Length: 174
Image 1 (spheres, rainbow, N blue to C red):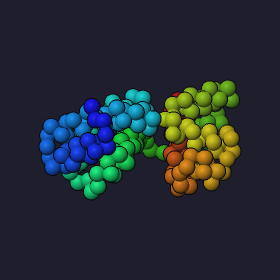
Image 2: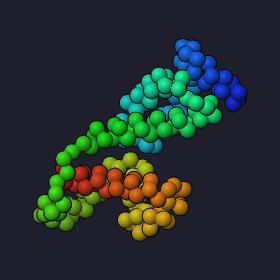
Image 3: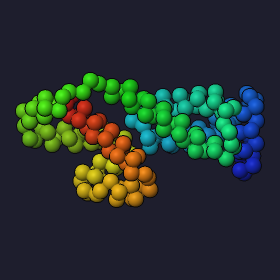
Image 4: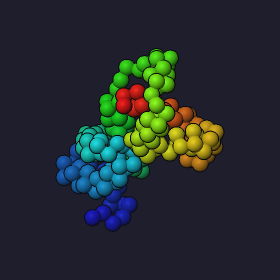
């Protein structure tokens, strides 16, 4: 087990030189962090795939890492990117025109819509659910959400847009 930052940095440096044993050890050391982060940012069914793909990317691209100190943030960026990629694949669809989608939803009984909305919200990954609840239920502004989440307004807008797309898709397909 790695006990200090120096040991971790030395392991990363060794992995960057192509040392296969160091790469394997680095992957073993960072696997718990990758798993924890993937659980937070992926659909439950995608966690194992995201972990596997992330570790593969890390093993292949650690050589190109410019600064050892950037490893942790790079690691999480890789995991987040893999989660997004898997999510896009899972939710790939041809969007209906807004008017047609609205007509389809209005034809359904109100109680069914409420049940489907609750199920759609439950199906969202935590980071999407959080932003949609803050905006649409607590009625916070984008700036207020960004401040609360300590993120940029652009990231909040993007996440809110994606969350609403996922809810819409769920509602139209159920």
